[in-house]
Amino acid sequence: MNGPLAGIRVIDVTQSAAGPYCTMILGDLGADVVKVERPGAGDDARSWAPPYWGDEGCTFLALNRNKRSLAVDLTSTAGKSVFADLLHRADVLVSNMRPGALDRLGFGYAAVAAANPRVVYCAISAYGGTGPKGDRAGYDPLVQAYGGLMSITGERSAPGEPPRPPVRVGTSINDMGTGLWAAAAVLAALLDRERTGRGQLVETSLLETAVGWIPYQVMAYLGSGTVPGRHGSGTPMNAPYEAFPTADGYLMVAAGNNRLWERLCRAIGAPELLADPRFGDNPDRVRHRDELAALLGEVLRTRPSAYWERVLDAAGVPASPIRTVAEVVADEQVASLGMLRPVPHPRIDGYRDVALPVRWDRERPATRRVPPMFGADTREVLAELGRTPGEIDELIAAGAVAAQEGGPVAVSRGQRGPDAGRARHPDG
Image 1 (cartoon, rainbow, N blue to C red):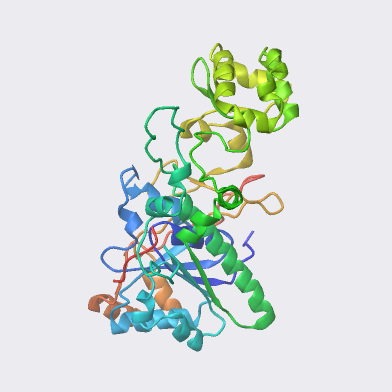
Image 2: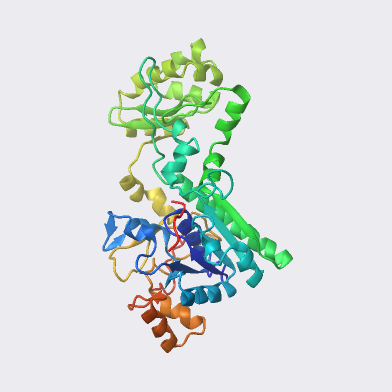
């Protein structure tokens, strides 16, 4: 499987998380992704460690497979010439430099589109590039705070106690979400180019993603005037729909309708709750969620999570223990989906990566290249641009480019199974 984007070249001027995630998706889909990094440092995420896997930072490994690394000084005349040659041959440019940074270097959208009208130019930023905060830098947790996510994440305060502290969503959800939106927008622009013959400017940001994650909270506020708060593991519109303590941990129970509520009560041996007028239907249960949670907790604390999972599964009630990452990695269902794939790696024994969560004809996109060493593909890419070995040596000597002299690392056929498959600041 070469991927639907085979033959598409993506120039990746991103670092940290949101931009690299976008370009990794495009690479997984078959695009030739050339990751442009600044000499001397490279992507900031290379140093986001520990943890390390071998000598390489796990964050960088997670977001940069299926790419080639080209180290170019975009502030130098020779480096700009190399970059201009790349863009002349590019189908897509993805950047998460701070708004205006590429313009000041001479590579804003207008200049690039004039030289290559077919290019899809994707600009990722923290706050969107316009408005009072448009040109500011930002990272995922900052925008989780600014965009309202932290205000609805965390445990509810008990009556009479002070407010609980804010909680960050446990993954970089705005980064990952912005990368997904950027990739989807690039794909749509490429499809549009098939009809029009021209590329276009695509823009997205962490803030737009943050607001986009909370549509029903926003609509609830607009409709009711009530400011949404924290609901711990639950939701404001369903009950019981949260994690309950058991004898040895916590069990997430999702009884989101009256039919499941009835099954739950009978399965746990508490049919008397069905006759309680406080819990007659979902709106009643939501209004009395604290009393309901206390009553259910009394029952569920009497047995371990695994016991209740079996009981509720037999009754057709959705439920799951709260599991650790280690348990997820070892899970049979995750394994059956081929989400964690062994991939040959020249420096890391037992290397695996997290697959793109889609399949075509039951086959996942392959890992064609493990995450590159800094500048590992500089010579290869420059040779494709027509530079001779002597010219490449001169560029390296002048500091316009940098090269890792170990050469590129590619996985010849990927890893497949039956079901597997110096301008700052960036987004975050």
